[in-house]
Image 1 (cartoon, rainbow, N blue to C red):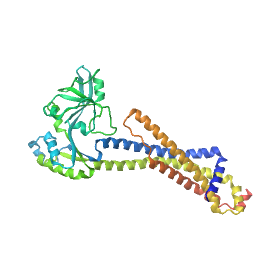
Image 2: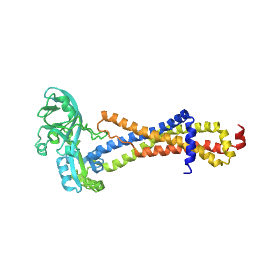
Image 3: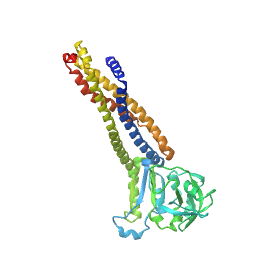
Amino acid sequence: MRWLVPLSIAARALSAHRLRSLLTVLSIALGASAIVLMISLAESGLLTLSRGLEELGGARLVLVVPKEPERAARKRAMFTTGFTRRDRDRLARGVPHVVERAAYAPLGPQDVISDEGTEDRAHLVAADSGFLGAFRMRVARGRAFTDEEDRRRARVCVAGPRLAERLFRGDPLGRSVTVGDLRCRVVGVLEDRARLGVDFGFDWVDLLVAPIDTVADVEEAARASALLVVKTDDPRNNDPVKRILNALLVERHHGVDDFTLLDFGGILRKFEGTVAVMKAIVGLIAGVALLIGGVGVMNMMLVSVSERVREIGVRKALGAAPRDIGAQFLCEAALLSGLGGLLGALCGGAAAHLASALIRRFTPGWVGAVSTSAVVAALLVSGLVGVAFGWLPARRAGRLDPAEALRR
């Protein structure tokens, strides 16, 4: 109740100079809206990437990736380089806490020719039958190839939706495509679903997936560049799973460390830490506009003090304490910045929604969000800016000599 009287007086004083007050409020609102908009877009990007990874298993993913060996390199001739079906099956049988596994080799963009003579380029992926399930890639038409077809090296394949649309004028099922020395029959078309920012070496919608053993017959790099994807039942079990995987693979590869283990649990933690730092930097950059608005608040309050010197003298002559005078002007500054912060948070949230809607038109997988922490931060910082930049004018008003003020 004590602050209601100063606030009502502050509201009347500010309404006496509406245009000046409006411009000052807008300067604060601009900075607050920049904070909310920029941090919300950064958070939306993180949510988009996180959702794409979570659909695949997120922190439960462990990738076994081939690399050049650092020790015992001469023993490489004693075994087949890369990862074979036996490697995959051994890992499936001998490792606890593993709920899903797959092998695939991303062979990059390749020239593709349809049986109609249409030429195009698409990512070729040599994979086993568990690949589509492990990466949550749904078949919209037709079917996926089976493990039996992979074992007997059947010449079948599954096409991405955009590739199938460009290559064939009609139904692509049952039609043939040629990639290098491989000619295969299309048995399925994938669902049109891209995952923004998630890159495992291939395009999610513009690709051709064929059995890994079939491709290996005509492309030696299919086995040499194959990766193993392992999904655990809980991220806490990633470390023991990695230790067992490492021991089994070192044994099978005769001590040659031609592989590395990528734990997505650790990768995601580092990435989230990096994004948190980036959000803080973005917030600080946007906060510069808020500081500029604070300078505007100080300028307006200094002008207000100079215009109301006689009023200050009268109030002091009637017994008002310097603290009360200072509190009055501080309330005016806080009211200006508070209104600006509230308006800026609302405008920033609306702008974030609008920006997400526009991005979603071109990138359907985008996840829009308004950062609650950014809204709270914008409101708090706006209030603090008003108090900080209003303190000097309030102090000057409180220290005015009443006799000197009444003579003006």
